Length: 284
Image (cartoon, helix red, strand yellow):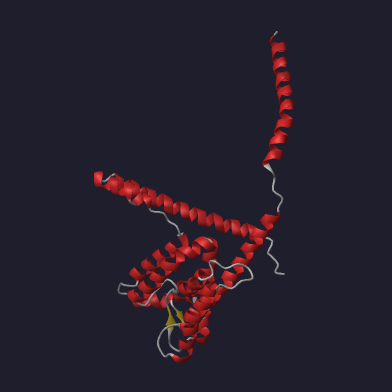
C-alpha cells in the first residue's frame, strides 16, 4: 500500500488556494473589462450585458495554458524568434551547467515551430481539454500537464534524433486525448473507447516512431499518452475509494437533530425566564 506524505493534505489545500486565487484574479480582471466596455455608450452597454457578462471561464487551466502558448508564439514572431525558440526548446543533449537546460523541461510545451503547429495543438486541446478538466478537476490536470512536460523532455534527451530540438504541446494533447477516452471509466473496468483510442492513436505513433524519418517528436506523443493513461486510472481509483469511504460514513438523520433541539428547548426557555425574573427583581 502506498504511503502518503504527512504534509500532502496541506500541499493540496495550498494548491487549491492558488488555483482559486488565480480564478478570482481572472474573474476580477474580466469584470473590470466588462465595466470598461459598458461605459463606452449604448452599444458598449448592450455588448457587455448580452455577450461579455455571459461568458464563463469553464476550464481555467486549459484556457490559461492556451493563452500562454499564444503569447509565446507572438513573442517568437520578432527578429529574435530563433534565439527565443532555442532557449525554450529541449535539445537532444544534456548540459548540466546551463539554467535553460532545467527550465526547458517545462517551457518547451509553450513554444511552437509555426502557426500551423500551434493551431493544430490548440484545436485539439479546446476539443477535449474542457471536458477533461471538468471531470478530472483543475488541480489534477495541472499536475498531469507538468509531469507530461517533464517526461517528454527527458524522452527527447534520451532517444531524440541527433541535432534536433523539441517544441510544442503535442504530448499534453495526447495525454488529454487518452484522458478524454477514460471519462466514463470506473475502478476495475477498461472502457472500449480507451482501447480504441490506444490502438488508433498510440499504435500509429509507435509505428511512426520506428519507421518514419520525419521531424515530428513521436516519442513526445507516446510519453504524453502513457502519462495520461496512467494518471487517468490512478485518479479514477482514488475518486472511487473516496466515494466508497463517504458512503461508509454514518449519516446523521435530520429527525434526530430536530428531536434533540425540541428536547433542549424547554431548558433554554427556563433559563431565559429565570434571567428575566432576575432583571425585574433588580429593577424593583
